[in-house]
Length: 341
Image (cartoon, rainbow, N blue to C red; front, top):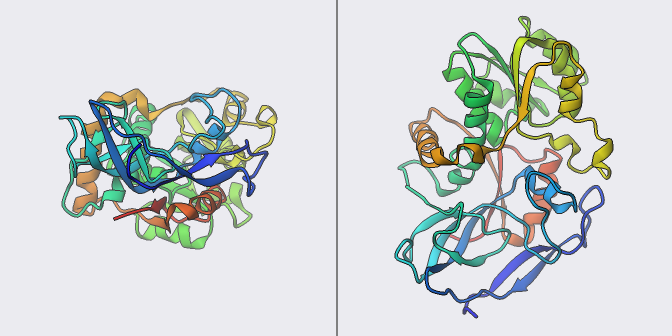
């Protein structure tokens, strides 16, 4: 075994609804010494994302469930601290799916391991947010599924988060009118005044349907779906003929105890006449464009064109509370855990 002292957050039991104290547990875990072609990395920054919650359930989805006693899945920025590979050397920085732990050993050529091409004025953690998987998700979902045209009205839910941030600012650069949906006046003000959206509707204000209709007088051409629930129902009557709905996720249902009874965006949209063009997508559909899109987003961050916010929890021991808060919208922008420098 390796010399490194490692801690990991592991799944001890499957949550029933909201995550409880004994569901996810911080434990000491050994680090395996690298074999030929492998590396050991130290995790510097950990990304927390909504998709992690459904993977804690014992249900087949688009990705396999996390096994009991296994670390929670998650992407990180990490530094190579030991190498038996010519592909990655000690000191190299990578993004990888390390899971919620401080050190991990894996093959240097493992899937989804990418050496970071650093840019001036782009901090490392941005490669987990607007210049990382969430940013690529927003960019690809909008451009390849939403197919924006100048003059379109684009609505994006969870507008101040890392996906929504990229969707809205990219849509503006394509000449669209952009309306965000976010929770609370602070987030809504930020989306309009800092990110440059044309309007932002506060779903917590109690007038969602009327406010959304007022913000979209010409209807909605693209709805980028992140949350589901009441927002989808408010959007549905405003969709124009020919509307497109990229479905990234629906976080409002992720703590449901019985997913089979949840009314998903698919139920809402398929009940419309005509049924709008809509589909669930994964960013991995455009994996062959990973570096190209990362470079586009990082360059926009470096130039100041692409703005973003972050919420940072310090230390792996605070990851669970940060994750629970994120599922309730308590974070502002990308939720990260800072583990080491």
